[in-house]
Structures are given as structure tokens and as C-alpha cells.
Image (cartoon, rainbow, N blue to C red; front, side, top):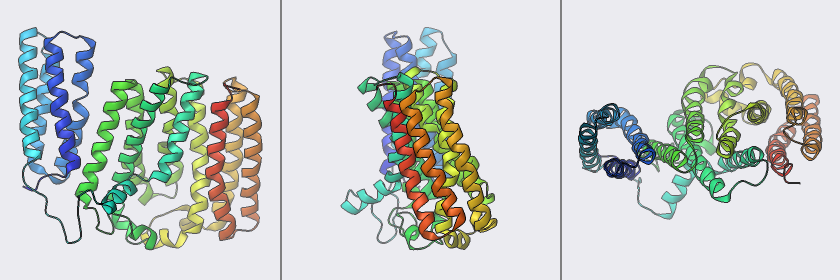
Length: 402
């Protein structure tokens, strides 16, 4: 059987190390710390399970055995029996790690997993760093709003690192799932690492799974479980609901799928507060209603590419006139939603002034696009929308401080 890439070998080592520390902490009767350490072994095992199911069938049964033994150890609470089951789980994880490291995966000509400059660039490209930057910004600002000021810098750094891993993992999995349509959507997408064949799809899959697993481990271990769960939910929604299903089946894809990009502010809020309350939902809704006009402006620019790939984006299915009508409608709703945090009392006048000024500019550009729909005006709205969201969330973060 061909083995996995280094991106799956690393989770196997982490799973073995986490299992060992769980056994040691259990023997030392560390209580809550033991439970946390035990739980941290499961995400890497889950990543191996998914990769095994999709590409390395021989790993499926050993992974199931390791997970089952973990479950048995959790259920069997009698001290001696619990420790024996935990030790068996550790042994099973070691066997799994050995299997993951066995053999080598054949590569096509021109493919490499070595740490050349090109391969580093390709793996960085898989994480979609430009998109990630805006997601991290909204997550950080959500943490500032939740903390009602500057959060502890260590907690902020841990949240950002975990969120970056979650976003990067989801983006890498998106590259794998979209490689067929990327080949049809012009030179920009055909040059992507997986589509162009510079990174094997199996390696990109394992890379994405590894980043996603490590995100959960980091956030659960250093921040809190709610933060880790929210990041994972956003990851899975983007990959399974939007990329795998909605994107290819309905022109409302970005309306519903936009929920994935609206999760980072919730992650930041949960990292600061340990809970989710109504004001956190307002931050979610801002990004949720911002996403459709943002992406529809882009869809107007690359409508032919979407049509060539058979993707039912709104301009392809309903035409430009309906698309710009909806852009204006969603822009107006967006501005109304941005005022709600002030009305609720979550944010003050600094934020309100920014929301109204930025919102006015956003609606003005949307109306201008509706009056005269040209590629230049669509591009202006698309690029301005990025700046709009960044400045709005920065204003929300600064408001409690000023």
C-alpha cells in the first residue's frame, strides 16, 4: 500500500505523543488535565481516518481500533481497567503510526514534496493567504469586541494561530475538491498547485486534514473547547456544505455558504468570553450579509469562467440585471445590520460613525453599478468591499478602547 505524505505522518506522531501523555497523566491522577490530554489525541486520529477512507484503505481498520480503544478507556472508569485500556489505545496508535510511515507514495513526473522554494510556495498557496488575512482580521476584532478592549496577547496569539490553521486547512481541502472545475475556469485557476499537478491531490488532502486537526488541538488546548468547536464547524461548513454541495447546485450558493466566512468573529468572541451571546450574532450577521454582494461583484467579472465550469453563480443563471438588483438590496440590508450593535448597546458612537460612513460609500458604489453595469465598476465594488469589511471591523475593535 502506498504510504501517506509527511502531512499525515505528522498527525500520526502527534496522536501517539498525545496518547502517551494521556496515559502518563492518567497514571499520575491529573484529573481534568488528563481528560483534556486524552481528547487532544482524537482530532489527529480523525484526520487519519478520513484520509484512510479516501485514499489509504489499509489505515481504516487500525484507526478504528485505536479510536475504539480510546472510547473503551473513557467508558471503563475502574482505575486498573481504565489504565489498561488506555495503554492498549497507546499501543494501537503506535501500530497505526508505523503503518502510516510504511512505504512511499509514487509521484508523477514533476511532482515533489521536498522543501524546495517552489513547494513551499505551493503549500502556502493552498492555504489561500489573501482570503485568510481578512478572516483573521475579523476573528481578531471579534475577540477585541468580546473582551471590550485589548484581550490578553497570549490568548489572542493562540486564537489567531488556531484560526489560521482552520482556515488554511479548509482552503487546502477546497483546492482538492475544486480541482476539476479549476481546470475549466481559465489560466488563473488552472495554475493552482493541485490542478496544475505540482502538488498531488492526496498530499493536499492530507495537508488540509492535518491543519484542521492541529487547529482543534491548539484551540482546545490553549483557548477553550467552544472556540475549537466553532473553528471546526466553520471549516466543515465551507468544505462540505459550500464547496462540495451548494457551489455546484444552486445560484443561492454564496448566500447560504457565506455562513462559513462569518464564523471567525464568533471564534474571536468565544476566545474572549468562553460563550456566545446575542451581540456575537450581530458580528456574524454583518459578514453574512456582506458576503453575497462581495462575491456577486466578482462573479460579474468572471461570469464566463463560471459558465465554462458549469457553476450556477447568479450572473450565469439569472443574468446581470438580477445580480446587480440583489447587490443593491443586500447592500442596504447590510448597512441596517451594521447599525444593530450600536442600537443594542454593544458598540458606541465611534463604531456607528464608521458604519454609516462606510455603509453609505458601499451603497453608493452598488447603486452606481446598477445604473451602469461595467467590469470596471464591478471590480471597484469588489475591491472596495474588502476594504469596507476590514475598516468596519477595525472600528468595532477600537470602539471599546477609545
